[in-house]
Length: 515
Ligand code: GLN
Image (tube, rainbow, N blue to C red; front, top):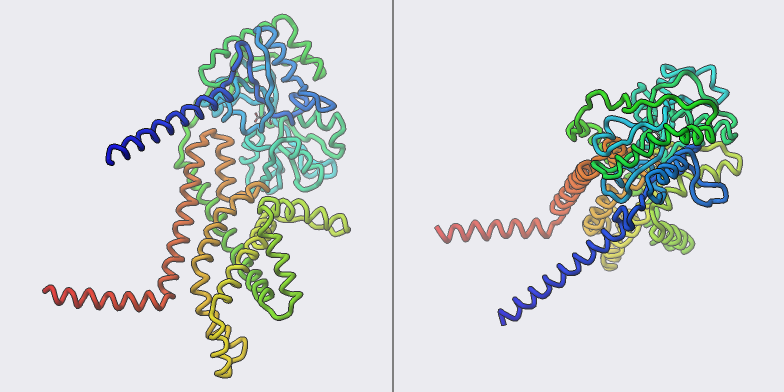
């Protein structure tokens, strides 16, 4: 019998190992950089014209970087396959070797060079400030940006530069095209972005009310990034040398830009200095600040959610039928649709609806986040409250009423105190869910705990360490919340208290007997 069960377990273990191996090999087959010989998978974020963008008619990619890498491919005898992905996903993709190289107007910086290798610089660039034409007199340079609202693209040198300005409110977008759009729509005062990209957007007429002001804030060089110690680094460098020598580089340059290309150094100046090493302890204060924002977001949302939930629960048990139906519709809608969709509807949908009917309305992110979370949790809380109240035996209503108590009195002194105890466990669950759900509002750029983590990963590329720290902080918060609810449950539970007293008596009397 024993042997049989041992065999059974060994067989299960064997089967699981085979399964695991299958998954691993399938995964590495699907994600290995070069499945075929001589093919190079190149990542790019195609919302950065004129360097990379969607070709007209949606057919593939086009741009300076795209032409340049195709030429490198021809020179090095490699077939190039472009793969679109978010800009802040490029370096992680290189680290995990899902792609073999990245070309995306990426500035060579010392921080990035700690995690990836750069080929020799291929373009000279720099950051510029863009403002709306009507604000041109007011903002003329870096110093005028203090206390202003600035839009940037996530994980870019522009985002890093903007953080150096004191008192600014930074709005982070997935790419610079979205940031420039936000400026043109009048939602921010300025954009800090790569000068050639902003100038190109203005030139092709996508942004007719936007202008570049002041001098370039930085001098930067773009480089092709490859995984550390990539065998392709030398091939790419040799091909670039060749293109520069033969004049092919100049040809491609002049297809996209006016004038002569700048002289390019062999090594970007940014790589010549020393860099500070990554340290999680230095990041901790920012994460803790994010945690505080998360706690505030939860507290506000639970507060308003409870008010809404109580009203809805009262409506759903009221004798006036239409009220019950309305609250049912509300609850079904908010429980039956994803919270993420609700957040989008409220932050993007509501203002545009109100603007259509002529009301000038725009949402502050905190207000939008609290509104979405409260509306959603009100639906869940309403069900918890209604369930709690209806779980109390009908006889108690009758008993209270026969003593001459009215509805309010019965509710207040008889029903609610008992119902509340029954509601506590599901209330605790809802509270914990709420703490975790706040992370969803990162999507609208609201800087709570998760978003702070995301922003850090975008500049340090230490995804594992930072997300693990973020997860631990959430765990700590939910742990505290669950402890508080257990404590409350214990305190409010007369039966357990009575049992405790009784068992205390039993132990003390058995101790007496033993002695
Ligand atoms: N050059 C900037 C950087 O590397 C922006 C690049 C981009 O948005 N594609 O950070």
